[in-house]
Amino acid sequence: MEVTLKDVQAQPVLYVRTRTSLDRLPQVIGESYHKIANYMQGLGEKPAGVPYTAYHNLDTRDMDVEMCFPVSNPLPGREEIKGGELAAGRVAAAMYKGPYAAMEAIYSEIFRWLAERGHQAKGVYYEYYYNSPQDVPESELLTEIVIPLK
Image 1 (cartoon, one colour):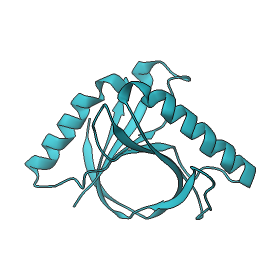
Image 2 (cartoon, one colour; image 1 turned 90 degrees about the vertical axis):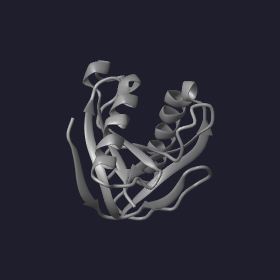
Image 3 (tube, helix red, strand yellow; image 1 turned 135 degrees about the vertical axis):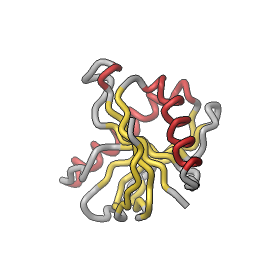
Image 4 (cartoon, one colour; image 1 turned 180 degrees about the horizontal axis):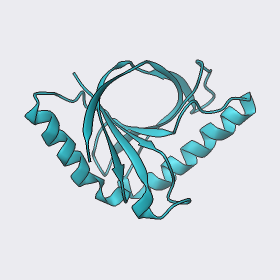
C-alpha cells in the first residue's frame, strides 16, 4: 500500500447523514446509496464519480456517517437526502485491495505514515468504494481511503 499526498478540488455531492452501529453499517450504507441513486435517477442525473462514505467518528457503537455520491452540479436535496459540497484541500490517500474487515490495520499504517512526516488529520475519514461485495469477492474489493489534512 502506498500513501500519497494530493490536493482535491471542491465537489458537489448528494448525501445522507445518520448515526448507526458498526454491525448495521453495511445495511445503512446500502439503503442510503439506493435512496440517493433513485433520487438522482428521478432528476435525470448520474454520479460524477464513485460513491463514498465519510466517517465523522470511529465509535463503533454510535458511528456518525455520511453516505455520498459526487455530482456534476449542485443539486437540491429532498427529505433525508441533502445537497452539499466536499471541501477542497490537501489529503493523504491510499488505495486498498481486500476485505473491509481488515481495514483497521490499513488505517493504522496511514496514521503512522502521517505522524512520521509531521502531518495531522482533520478528523473525518473517507472511503471511496470502486466496487461492491455484491459484484466481487472480498479479496478483490477496491477502497480508496482519503484523510483530509490540517
